[in-house]
Length: 250
Image (cartoon, rainbow, N blue to C red; front, side):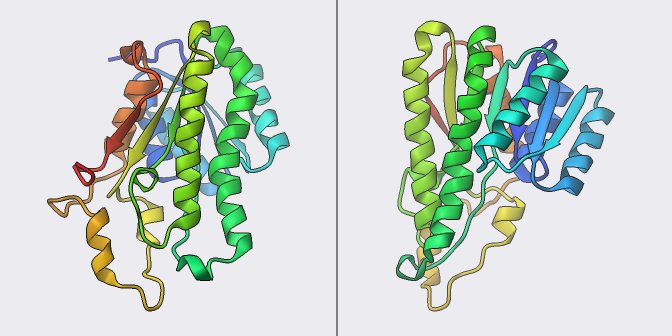
């Protein structure tokens, strides 16, 4: 199925995890890809894999927390491909800590990458997405929908992404733009692999953010939702959040 034939998709956080899986899924469906991340080796690996799947791919190193860098990335994407049909904001970072011990610089860095970065990319891409009547797919989290212990900054950033998504969906719906968010949970990614309980944390609190079957699944499960929302199959879906969490919050 070539849902993305002739379409140009920009993906942030493409060096690993959900970003890489989403790039591979869209590549397999005929999309042209502009991939950004701060990790050169991972970005190169994703590019190689997508090219093996037959996609035309361009990459750029970009720290999404830098507004100048995000505008430069979008400008480069348009120069290369002439248009943008979908922006998938997947770049993000996570830190676990007791809220009362969370350092201000850590709080600010997480919000800068996750929330500011999503805003900067959207702001840079919106004129082009309005021209193509395209769409935005933002990566939120189940941490935006229910209390997750030790993730104050991450949860705040992901809640902000949901609110931003709703705003974009309504503000630009009459101009043909769609905006949706995905809220993953219990997905195996490098971010998940880095999880470590803060010292003195009660491990029983982990149960509230575990799926009922205690199964974790791969990033390809989220990539399937990204591809759906970014495609014309979701033409009548906007302002929505989709949980991909194995029933955790059901």
